[in-house]
Length: 437
Image (cartoon, rainbow, N blue to C red; front, side, top):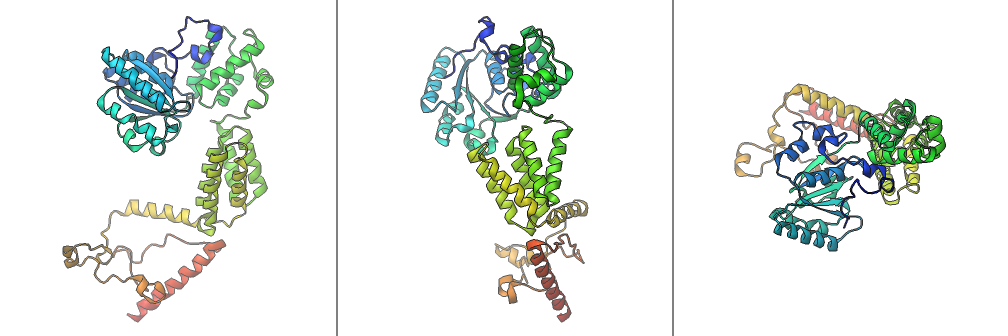
């Protein structure tokens, strides 16, 4: 269990700056405007006088714990915090007992579970009867997608609120508060920009880093970029992860892969890692490249990227980065095709402007006698019963689409070259079937 909140009256020097600046009222919260501005969901929840169970989903350092504590304060509720990393069934039982004591005293209770996704199914299920009975209000915090990591039964009883990384302007305001709290000189604008970029939307990381730098150089020292580099060294990332250089580097990696240059692709991949980009983000981009730029020319590329992503999740850094490097080089040397990507976009545009056409009768399913009487499925040709497993001349588009559109145009590279040959042969069979009618 987590001990009660430390009051500001405790010795300031012993309390981390991030804790000292933790908001004590909703109006002190910086960021999360989509949830906390007037009329927004969490603001309404605070003002309603009726707390509700919820899942707070967002990256580290964006205020999940703070909001849970503020809700307990707003409703004068007993606040019980459990860390799913360290806790288990014993801690859950203790939380339930505290909630019962609070209920006997006529008080509300909020049970806050940090990193709730780390609890297994049975541990998460242990909360269900108490949430349903109203013994306590459940608040879970997670950095992972709750759709995959939180039991559906628990998820159905809680509202999911998505918290976003703290915007640059809000981080600047937080940095101003930090200067006032420490009595420190404000950093030069360029240094502040680099600090904010390094924090990457994580308020706690910003405050901890700034506090460490001030301790090293003193409150009267003007912090410029040179001071930051001297204090942080390799920790200080080389570019603003929310700015143009970040997206330019991603673009360079993508274009190097598309251009079949493994050395350049590997260079930009390492640059991104060295610049502090989350390797899981790079993994997602590689999966996209496999679908967009390689496609059916080499279907193994997508599987390899998925395997590399899973390997990284299991091993982490730095061991897992080698699996991603394998994927980068494979994508670069693989046969290229954007035929599926182009076909998908063309089909999507066509459907959006064409409207809804009826499904031809012979393609409709006929599970009932009435449907069969209405000719659903009549004259459908079962491809497996036809020569070469292909119903030559059969029509699969809505009847008014003649000639039918041809979205997919395979290239002559890799496996897609073989696909192109097969499709050409099938079209010949279609033409022969038409002439034979």
